[in-house]
Structures are given as C-alpha cells and as structure tokens.
Image (tube, rainbow, N blue to C red; front, side, top):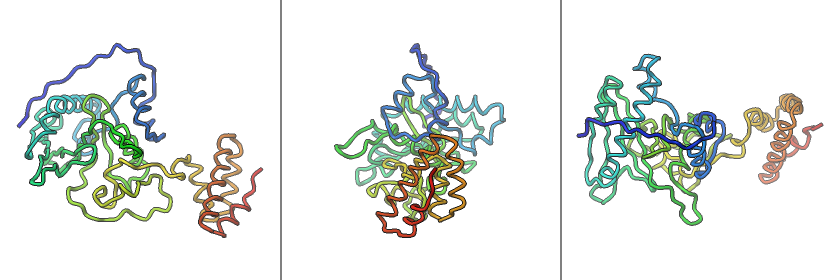
Length: 313
C-alpha cells in the first residue's frame, strides 16, 4: 500500500509564446497531429493539463477551493505516477494503492487498482499502446479509468498511436457527441502522461453504437470493435477521426442537415446569411459541392436535383 506522496516541483526558464487555454482550443479545433500538439505544449505559454475535475469530486469542494484542489490533485497524481510507473508496468499481480493525499483533498478514501498479468501472461486492462488503472472513491461510488500510455509509435503505414494522437480526439468527441463517447475529464501532457475518463465497466457488453446519420467523428473499421465500446459509447479513440460533416462550422453543419432534409426555405435563408461573409460563403459552396458529390456517388436522384436547384449569387 502507498499512502504518502510528496509533491514534485518544476521550474522552466524557457521563454514561451502566449496562447489561449489548450482545453478550449482543442474543443473547438480537432487536431490529430502529435508533433503539432507537442510543439504547442513545449513552445507556448499554455498549461499541459486538460479538462477539469469530475463532477462527483468537484461537488465535494467549496467553489473557492476548486482551482486550488485541482492543482494539488494533478501534482499528487503526477508525483505518484512518476515514482511508481515502472513498478506498475511490471506487476505480476493486482495491486491496490491507498492514495492518502488525494483522500485528504476530497475527504473520502481514494484507491488506485492496477492489474498484473494473468495466467495467460497478459494484463487484462492492457491495450496495444497503453493500459488502464481504476481510480476509485468507493465511499461515494465514484470510479474513473486512468489510462497510461506507452511512447507514441507508428506501425509502418498504420496511423500513429499514443496520448498525443488520442487525447485531443477524446476531448473533442466527448464534448461534441456525448451520446456516442465515454466522458472525458482530465489529461496531462507532461511527465508521466495520462488521461482520466469515466469508468464504463470492465466487461465487454456488446451494445452497439447508436445509428447516427450525421456523425461528427468516426472510428476505423479495425478499431470499431466491442472491446472499444461500453454502453454503445467509445472508450478508446486511437483511430478516430472527424467526418466531412464534423469538420464544418456549426452554421454549415446546419446547412448540411437542411439540404439533406430538402428544406428549401431554410437553405435559402442560411445561404443568404452566409453571403454576408466571404469565408462563410466559401464554406457554404463547399458544403453544396460535397453533397452534390455524395448524391452522385450514391445515385440519390432526389438529392442531386435538390442540390442542382440551389441558387448561389
């Protein structure tokens, strides 16, 4: 059992460029580019920490204490991981750590369960590029998946994997499509990098994802398997990308839906509004071109005719 954890301190003398908060930036602008994200954290004056405390923990705190406790929680967890990660990676049996300092922050016991290798020689919570531990506050029935990552890797012509490729997608997808994605709470892009999400259950439940005509994110066929879903929601974002529809601004997603529902008056109104701005009008024309291509490829004569009749000034 591990109960006492000391804080790490870190000072950086490097001059860094001012930047907006990274959490808000990634919610608005999805990026699956590990090098780009790493450069932002390294070269710009932006916190390497994403997200916020889960509501079950935040609700235990006076409003004025949330920022301080969040800071201390990150430091305690980071220090524990730096000290113990090698041992956790090599465990040959399950282990429960009592995290006393985190317990004190929230006034309720906190434990971390890490799994060791089973009789088949594998960690049952091990993935291809990282593994999960369970962070629990049992007295308040609050449980979270703490995903720890291996070094980012690329497998020939297959997409790269690792936290720098997954975290921005998890954050953006959870925010944009909460019915289709497990809840993302926090992440760290420094020291021993991690991602904290809702605990969705250990057992594969084989519940299929819902039918979503206008997906904002999609997962490759190889990764879109039962093992990567719980209750029909993604719990892994390793090969998940934005759709054409998802890459559009909110008004242009609205235009896309209006066209697909053949609402001529709504389409005319949206296009009239878009014509007031060069960038918006260019994006609107792009939407029309994409749907014209879709109509042709799917031999959708009704959609093809509707798109052909849209008037652009």
